[in-house]
Length: 393
Image (cartoon, rainbow, N blue to C red; front, side, top):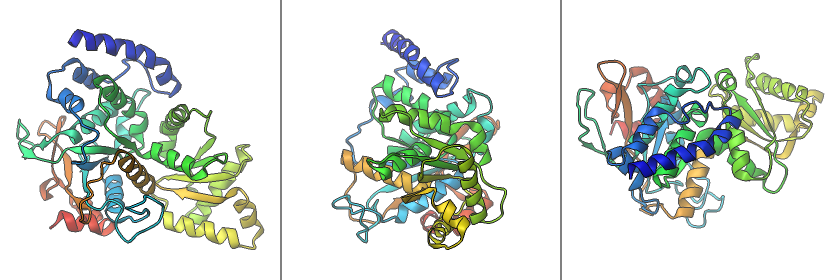
C-alpha cells in the first residue's frame, strides 16, 4: 500500500511541477516534508483523518484558522451575518443568521503569527508546513489540554469545512493541502480568503467581462500572493486569464485620499476597462468608510470625482474577506446539503495554537485566558463582541 501511494505521489508531483512553476511557487521539493510524511505513513492518525472524512456528514464545525486578527474578524461576521434566505438561498435577508445552527471553531494561530515572517524566499517552506499542520489539526477530534501534555486528550468537534483566513497561505500552503486531499482521496471543503474574494468578484460580474482591482497591504503586495491566486482561479475557471491590477495605496492619511491614489495608479497601468470590483486585502482599510466614499464620489459634481467614478462599472462592488468567505461557505454547504438545520443561533468554540517550552514546536489547545494575550483579549472585546460573549460565557 505504501509503495503504491509513493508511486502515485511521485507521478502526481511530476504532473504538478509545471503548474506550480506557473503559480510562482518553487517546485523544489514539490510539497513540504511534513505533507510527504503524512502521505507516506498510511497507518498514522493524520492520514486517517484525511481518508475517513465524510463530505456528506452535516455534523462538525466550520473551522477558521490563521492569524488571530483575521480569524476574529471573520468569526464575528459569520456569527451574525444575514445576507441570504435560509430557505431558498436567495440573496435576501430573512431575519435569521445565515449560519443558524452551526458551530464556528476559530483557531487563533498565536504560536506562528505573523505569517509574513514565515514566507520569506520563493518556497515559503516554514509557512507551508504550518498551514498543513493547522489544516490537519482542524480535522481532529481531540486537542491538547496544556503545552506540557504529550498526548491530546480534550475532545473537540471535527471540522466539516476549513477556512484558511490568511492570504499568505493561498500561495504558501494551499497547494500542499490540495495535494494531501487529492492523493488521500479526501474531499474536504476548503475556503481560502483571497481565492474566495476572486470567485465572489467573478460571480458578481456574472456574464459581463470581469476586471478586478486588488487593494493589498505592502507586505501582501510584495509576497506575490495574487499572482498565484489569479493563476489558480483562471485555470479553475477555464475562461482565460482574469484581468486584474494590484496596488498598495497608503501615502494619504484618509480613506478617500488612499482610494483616489489607488485609482490614479490604476489609470497609469494602461488598463482602460472599468473596474467591476475592488478586493480589499488590507486590514487598515475600513470597508464601510470606503463604501461611503464610493457613494459620495458617484453623486459628486467635482470634476475629479467624476473622472475617478468613471473608472468604476455601474454595479462596482468592494469585496472584503469576511463577506466573500461567508458567501463561499454558505454556497458550498447549501450545495452539499451539509447545514445542520438545527433551530439555534450560531455557536462558537474557540481554540489557539501555543508554543511548547522548547519554543519551537506547538500544539492546539482550547482558547483559555492563559493562552490568550491580554492585547488579543482586548481586541476581541472591542472588535468582536459576539465572539467575546461566547468566549467568556
